[in-house]
Amino acid sequence: MIIKTEKKKGISPLIAVVLLVAFTLAIGAFLSTWARNLAKQQAETVTQQANRNCAYATLNIDSVTYYPLKKEIVIKVRSTGTQAVTIGDVEIFNSTYFEKTYTPDDFVYQISTLQPGDSAYIVINNVINNITEVRIVPKYCPENAVSITSDEFSIVD
Image (tube, rainbow, N blue to C red; front, side, top):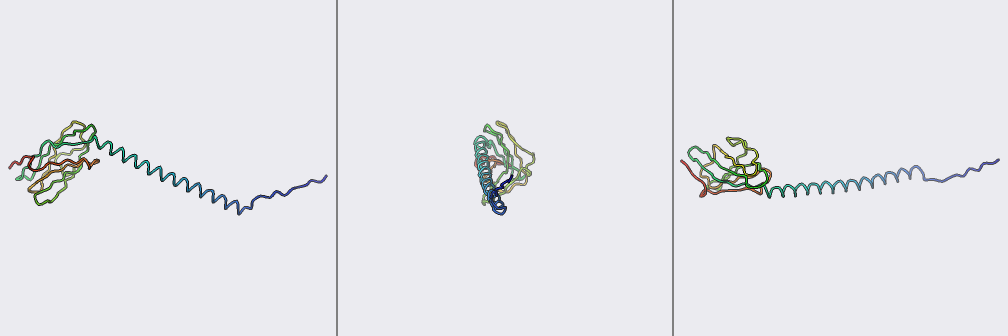
């Protein structure tokens, strides 16, 4: 009995390796593009969500009392929105358009977050002279900054 063996031809190992590398690179390119687009979409979603929440995180300056001799200012601020607001910086301007920014670390009493409807007093010592404007900037929603000018606040000697 004679057994015939047929030689089956296949692809060479070199071509197989080249095809495998090309396939791997194509899959890698597809996945990196997909991951980049997913990350970009997620970042846009987070930004939109933050902006949507900022629309409801608003403040109002109820009163400002400035004590020039003591170099102290007392600001009564109230959360008027439906979202909590974290107090960020207080910017104070004087008659020569000089601006001084005070951070929450500069406040006499530490204030963190105001819940809707809550009020708080911000007291700052060693403020600049001849104050003409006070601006409060929320930490996470700086576009919701509120300000009051010197003709609207009390000056007590």
